[in-house]
Image 1 (cartoon, one colour):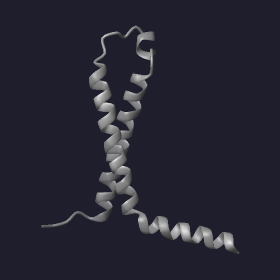
Image 2 (cartoon, rainbow, N blue to C red; image 1 turned 90 degrees about the horizontal axis):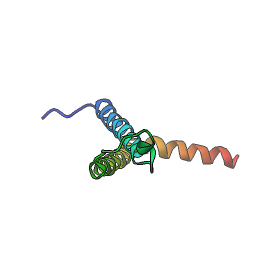
Image 3 (cartoon, rainbow, N blue to C red; image 1 turned 45 degrees about the vertical axis):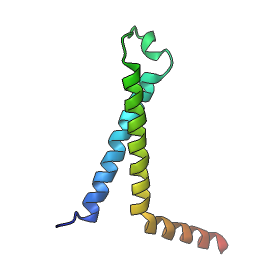
Image 4 (cartoon, one colour; image 1 turned 180 degrees about the vertical axis):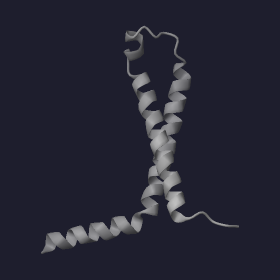
Length: 88
């Protein structure tokens, strides 16, 4: 079994985060109290919009967690360097 390159996996994780961010953003705007009704849009499947919003938020959170795990050595190294600079 050939495993995926780390860069390719990073790209896929980042695209999942980006796409889910867009979905969460759009559905969040749609859920804004009275916004769609203000534009005269009445027949909206609110239950479906809420489910899409919730699930895409969960996907975004899992993607962000994966992103942090993939970049943990970079994050810890930068954090250590930041505190070393402040000690001087």
